[in-house]
Image (cartoon, rainbow, N blue to C red; front, side, top):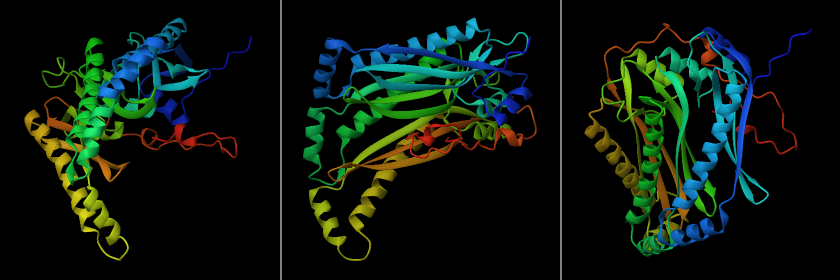
Length: 377
């Protein structure tokens, strides 16, 4: 009787990396859940959207949908005898007026005695995590659905007449981002982890509001500094970056995030418009963007100092226009501290853990979005 072929979502490089750690591919596992907000939930969301801030009905529904889908994926893996689920992806799709939550991952079979696990990172990133001493425990997430709200929006709109930070907007965005992060760490703590590595952040539009969704791999590291068990460390560094920092003796402490919403102001906007008609620097825009950057960097620095961090690594800054002469400046980085007992298992990473896979499917006119496929990280 011919052997049954194994189907896997792992690439050749990923299979190679997993083999180095004693794992072999073992199928693809899926879990889904279709959810409806219902009439009362929709009413509550609409009402709270007028006030601004978190919309708990939407937050809870989305969380419950994801949790149900994840549990079904995990149950399928258990039935199939899968040791670990690698490269877990989470999607939210509109389906006949409802919402489908979908989890997909590639199963692997591990050595005798290996505890079951799920990983948000792909197999290449997982190799880096494991080689740096971060044993995977579970895919974890934190989310919050929020609305700026009509009331806060009106207050902010009035302030756009003057140049400077719109504190009402900044407070909403800062509050929601930190809520999502704290829920992510709470999830990690429940599964007994002392770190969340490979954190990724997504901003989605859902049910008339925005949702901030953070994912990562809850992990255990024997040499993590004391206190990490009470509040797991968080890091958005790539697997290669975390491996490199571990080899230098640094451990992650916390993912630091800061945002500011700034207004050029009605008068400043008018001046900038006229200046743009002639060649040269638009000083109003230059100074506003500079001031906004200084504001977010100041918050990052203050948070890092309060933590007692030695470095803030991988700081990234994003800027986008919100309309009506408003811009949002968002900065994120990982606070790190030197720690004893940190070491990597191999002196250098294999090329297969570093080289990203390229897509080989050419879309043509079929409307596939290749940016969502393998190798887009």
